[in-house]
Structures are given as structure tokens and as C-alpha cells.
Length: 40
Image 1 (cartoon, one colour):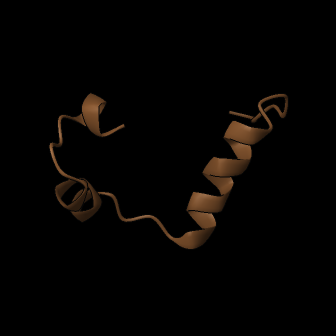
Image 2 (cartoon, rainbow, N blue to C red):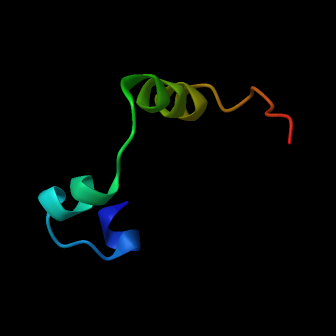
Image 3 (cartoon, rainbow, N blue to C red):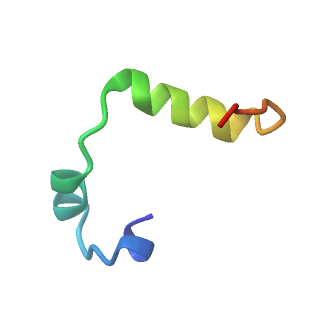
């Protein structure tokens, strides 16, 4: 993700990424369970 966004250090990356623990858990769940369909 850092490579895609162009950040060279984790600190600068994390300064811009402000996710709550719940948002992080949701993202991990979405990656771990790709068969679930999101409704857009």
C-alpha cells in the first residue's frame, strides 16, 4: 500500500491513514472473506 501511495516510510504513511480499529477490522475481514458481496 505504501508503494502504491508513494510513501517512503511507515511513519509518513500512517500520518495520512487515520483508520479506527473497527475500520481496520472490517478491511481485514473483507480481504479474508472475499466471497461476501458488498452492496453499492
